[in-house]
Length: 270
Ligand SMILES: O=C(O)CCC(=O)C(=O)O
Image (cartoon, protein in one colour):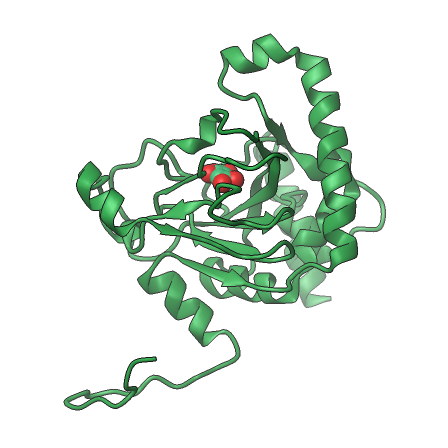
């Protein structure tokens, strides 16, 4: 532990319930929420991820998935297994999403990753941003990734590496810099690693004997497009409808857009 004393500072930080997590996100680009999901939830999610991955692989074909670099990855999980809506209900995660992206944040994608064992390769083992092909930075976060840890993230299982502060630099650094400063997010199952989507990260190689599974839910400001349109379903509260973009779908024409806006504003003044 370093000495917490300081001198010459002109302002002192005040601690609020999520201030450390927000500070880590601002400075490093990532933070870890431990014990965010219960052991029961992670066990159900592991089985559900295996089932959705098997079903989606059978539907599209393993060879065709490999050809598009999408093997070992399930997409839009909450569409096929409602347990994955639980991730959107984690209060500490919701607080960070709302603080950084605002109340109208949307779920852009929800991907399940099974990092194969025995050192096998996976598409996500390359450095990338979750808003890829962007070599510029914004003054505020545009999107946040929330990597729900279903199997322990360890050095052996290939926990994800993050490059601290890279959300604030337009370009990827030199290989020597990345090798020296990469930080591995070692944390037990049930944690959620929350990161600025512009922070460079890379899955580690899994040298263990079992797959290392995780679910990445990408939240973004409503200026960004969702990857997949989520289906409406009964029983969703207004916050969930908002997050899934059910009230924000592009309208078929000007009149429909105006009717919708009229309804929304009228309901506010009623
Ligand atoms: O599971 C991992 O280690 C990496 C996942 C990842 O990079 C992603 O979903 O963008």
